[in-house]
Length: 260
Image 1 (tube, rainbow, N blue to C red):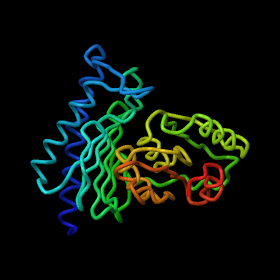
Image 2: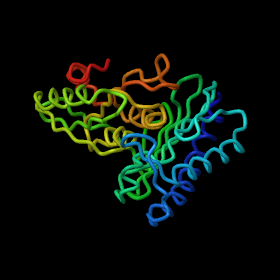
Image 3: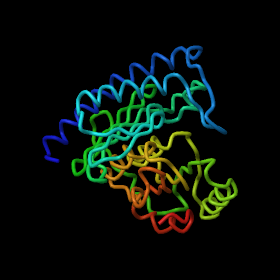
C-alpha cells in the first residue's frame, strides 16, 4: 500500500468518524430509543450499535470496495487490507447515559496496524494516528505520561466474562500490592487512548477483542506506549490479552498481569 493510499484511508476515517458521531449522539440523547438488549452477561447491545456499524460498513464498502471489514456486530473476515470497527465501545456506559463511550475505526495492512481513529463525541474528543506520523487529540499532538514508578502509577484493568473472575481479582490484588492505583472506565478503546494522552499510565485486560483495540493500538503506540504483540496468532479473529503502558512500567506490569 502506497503512502497516498494510506493517507486517503486516514482522512476518510476522520470524516466517517465525524458522521458516525452525529448518528450515535442522536441515539444517546434519546435513551428511550435505544432498544437495549443483552447479548450475554454484562454484554450490552443497543439499536445504535447496529445502526452505526451499518453506516460505517456501507460507506467503507463504497469508498474502498477491495478492503474487507470486520465489525463487532456483523463479524467479517480479515484480508491484506482490513477495517476493524467497534461502533459503540462502552455500550453499557452508553445505555446508562454515561459519556465514556466511543466509536473505534482501525485499519490494518498486511496485519500491521496502520490507522486508528477514535471518536468520543459525548466527551468532545477525537483521537487519531497513522503509523509513523504521531498521535493527536483534537488535532494536538499527544504522548504518554512517562511514568516509571509502579507505586505512583494509575492503572486501568479491563474485565471480561471470557476470563475467570478470580484471575481478574488476583490481578487487581497484585496491582494494589505493588502500590498502583486501579480503576476501570468501561471502554477498552478509551483505556488505550487515555494511556496515549497521559491521563493514565497503563491499560491491561486479560482478554479483549480486536475491534476494541485495533484503532487504540495505533494511537497509543504512536504516542510512545509499550504494547504487547496483540495481533500475534489469531488475535484478529479470536482476540488476545492487551498490555499498554509507559515503557518504563512494562517490566512491573508484565509481572503483575502475566501479559508478555
